[in-house]
Each structure stands twice: as C-alpha cells, then as structure tokens.
Length: 196
Image (cartoon, rainbow, N blue to C red; front, side):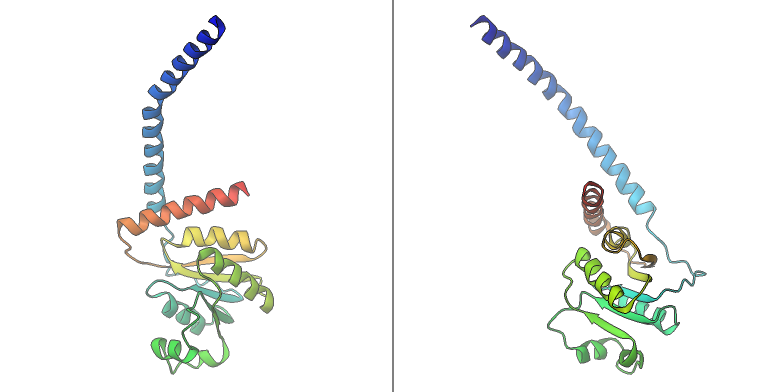
C-alpha cells in the first residue's frame, strides 16, 4: 500500500514536471517552424535567365497560371525533345486544351503528350517516371510554380532516382496562406521520403 502511494506520488510529480515543460517545448516548435518557413520562402528557386539547360524531356505540372505556356516556350526553344503535361483533367478533350492554349502550335502534332492519371504532386511524379521510362529519357526539365518546386523535386527524385532533374520555376505571387500550406506539404513530403 505504501509502495503504491509512493508510485502515485512519483507519477504526479513527473506529470507536473512534464506539464511545466510543455509550453516551452510548444513555443520552441513554433519558432523552429517559423524559422523553417522564412528559410523556405527565402530559398525558393528563381528562374535563371541565362541558364539554358537542355534535357531529354520536359514535364509541366498543371495547376498554376503560366506553367503550360512556359513549357511550350521551353519546347519551342528545343531544350527538350517531348513535353508531358501531367495532371490533365480526364474530362477535357485534347482539342479543348489546344484551343485554350495555342491551337495553331505545330508542336501539338509531334511532341506533346497529355498525362491524365495524376491527381496530386506525388501522382505527377509517378506519371512522369512512367513517361520518362517509356521514352527512354535520362533527364527532365520540371516546370511548376516557384513555391511548388521544392516539394515537386522531392517527389520526382523519390519516383525516379536515376534521372537528372532540372528545375524551371515559374514565378507566382501566391500570397501568405498558399505559401504556408505548401510549406506544410513540403515538410510532410520531406519526412515521408526521409523516413521511408
């Protein structure tokens, strides 16, 4: 009985000590997260006007303004042999996409593929890896918005470790909340890849 009372007392003392430390630990985590967010925003890849990296293929991830037109410009400059537009809505016909982008572009007839399986960034990476393997590509230019690029590269490197990847970021002023949301997704992807 005395032993049981001592155990209860020790447990209460330990629990109080942990509860006292929780606010400090929580504040420390918030400061670490905020520091990471500032680092993330400050190190977003910027387009290099003088860089003209070429690759076997070009992949555009749908979802943001300017991505597809940037991909078409890179393809027209012959910096890649084929272009995959990954994550295209399954209900959109190819002719509808052509009309929306550039119906007269002759590149549509020879060099552009539409990927319709990807529903998210991880899916983009899987879809692009299969496309690269089918075409025998060893290098890819990846085109997406600047704040989406870090997470995209993590997913692409995970899906195709043997392929060289070149970032072609499209600048976009996303605002604070989309940046925070993307930073949190980036952290989750980074943890998942590092742990598994």
